[in-house]
Amino acid sequence: MESLIVILLGLSIGSFANVLIYRIPKGESVVLPSSHCPKCEVNLKWWHNIPLLSWLLLKGRCGYCNSKISIQYPLIELLTAIIFLIIYLNIGFTIQAFLLAFTFTTLLALAVIDFYHKAVPDSLNLLALTLAVFYTLDVELIIHSFKNALLFGGAFAFLRFYVSFFTGREAMGEGDIMIAGTIGAILGLYTGVFAIFLSSILTIPAILFSKEREMPFIPFLALALWIVYIFEERVILMLNTLLFS
Image (cartoon, rainbow, N blue to C red; front, side, top):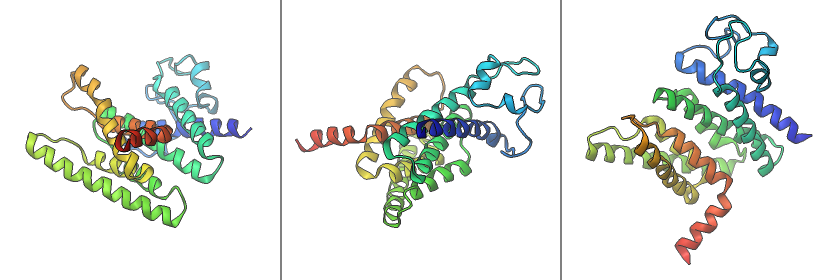
């Protein structure tokens, strides 16, 4: 029963994440106006807004003008539900689990926005970083997470200036620095450094096969963070084997 509640909650939060992805880059309110078709601008009925199910029943088209609805909408809802379910299975049905799942959902929204716009809103980036620091609700852990966030953010800032100076090109954006801080807050120093390294490895195929001159980095940082979080015990075992055997 709890698993079903978590999945439904994840689908609902995913639906809201789609609102953030669509509206925030355009400078629009995430509250008003109510949900409407971006093509015909007709306000949607409640049954048009049921996460995942409505897209399937409407066959991916607006119920009024029949224009196509991007598969992004059900995909984000499904991915968010998966995020919520996996974190619930990891740490249980707690407020900490909800806050951490919402952190990863915010990172998902940031990754999609960065993919489309090559820039991310500070409001969402600050939200992700704040949630990452405070989700544990334990004072000692919060202080520790804050220190790690500062360490990773500062290291990325220095790295950005050095790489930009020697290459003559802007190497990373300010948003990447804040995501690095989020990684540090969630993972800590040991596996956090590995997540940064993994994000660089994940970027290589995209760089090789993409014709884009400017490559968004946040999707790779967020994906690496998620992978390392899910397999953290195995990552620690692997690192211990490589470094201390």
